[in-house]
Amino acid sequence: MTMTHVGAVVGAVTAVMAILLHSSIHKIEEGHLAVYYRGGALLTSPNGPGYHIMMPFLTTYRSVQTTLQTDEIKNVPCGTSGGVMIYFDRIEVVNMLVPSSVVDTVKNYTADYDKTLIFNKIHHELNQFCSVHTLQEVYIELFDIIDENLKIALQKDLNSMAPGLTIQAVRVTKPKIPEAIRRNFELMEGEKTRLLVTVQTQKVVEKEAETERKKAVIEAQKVAEVAQIHFQQKVMEKETEKRISEIEDTAFLAKMKARADAEYYTAAKFAEANRLKLTPEYLELMKYQAIAANKVETCVLIHSYGPSRWSAARSQKREDILPHMVPFLQVHPDMTLQHDNATSITARSVRDFLQDRNISVLPWPAKSPHLNPIEHIWDLLDQRVRARAITPEMSEDLQVPWWKSGVTSHSKNWQIWCSPRGGDALQYLMQLVATPATDCYF
Image 1 (cartoon, rainbow, N blue to C red):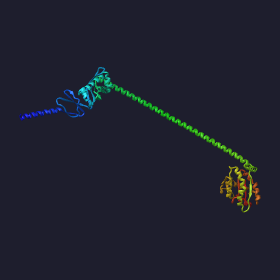
Image 2: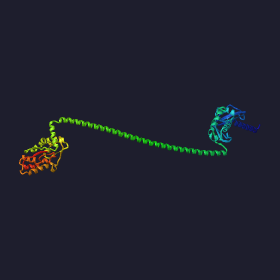
Image 3: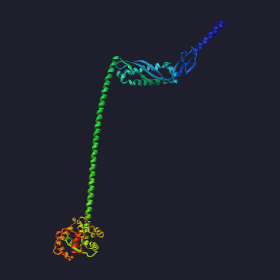
Image 4: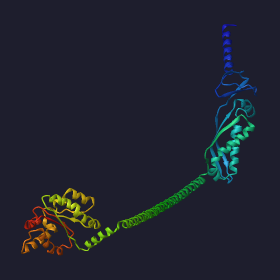
């Protein structure tokens, strides 16, 4: 055999080996399992992802997906109970086959198990559903439950036929209906839409009316509550005024009762004091005070002679004259003692004596003799003395014109007493008669 023949044989063997090797080596993708057929019989040992070797020409394989996959069934016809034929353009079924069930499922339903278990089942279940429902129900009213019904029906059959195959979801598109029917449905939907709009508008109007009614009720309740509050406020004010009036009446009653008790106590004490006070001597004094109050006067003359007559006059005012006046003025508190501002009456001892006995003294100005009624008495006496034919020279002679001068007829309404004043009318009168001064009390 020549070298040429040897090279040809080697080349042929190499080519055969390459073909055999290519036919025996195969690759399985991730998420798939390889099932093998030898002589048409399914082998029970699948292989997972990766490269594998099999007997060429005698063994074949099929790759089966074990992850989620979506099968699409297109243009599925469906006849409704009313005889209208509609078509579902696309139905998607999401399913998954577990690896442990691959051999059994392929053995029972081949590697194209989805056509038998899913595609054909979808056609069957969908026609069953359409045959018992109207077009209105399939197209509008029950369309939202078709996918769920298909899923439940498929899974129920698969649980018994292929336990390892599960349905995850079913998606159904809107079916195609005849054009004339579609237009009617569109018109119906338009009318329904307008009806819904009308109903909603009516509900809005009703809600607005209800809102206005509630607002009116709330406003009325607010007004009523405010009126009730004002009424309660007025009632409380009246009750407060009533309580204040009752308190004032009670206080006034207590005050009047206390005043009456005080007056009663005062009267009782006054009566008790009068019982102790009304001695024969006091009654005699009251007799003379009553006579004086009836405008009957008594004149008391007190003489003072010698150079010490001014100091004597002060003691005489306190010891002789004032004891006649003090009881009278104490009985008649509305009367005021009037004097001529002489030194003897303005002495501190005399002022203290009057102040201690609460005797009211009228402060006559010393430089205004014409304001003092005493001046009028001295003027009248001066006129009477000057009118006599014989001027008196002794005090006894002066007493005659004093008592006969008629002074009492002019001064019966006066309660006054007088005293000598330096440089005044009395001093001038005494100079005429050359006698010492004389004090007088009316």
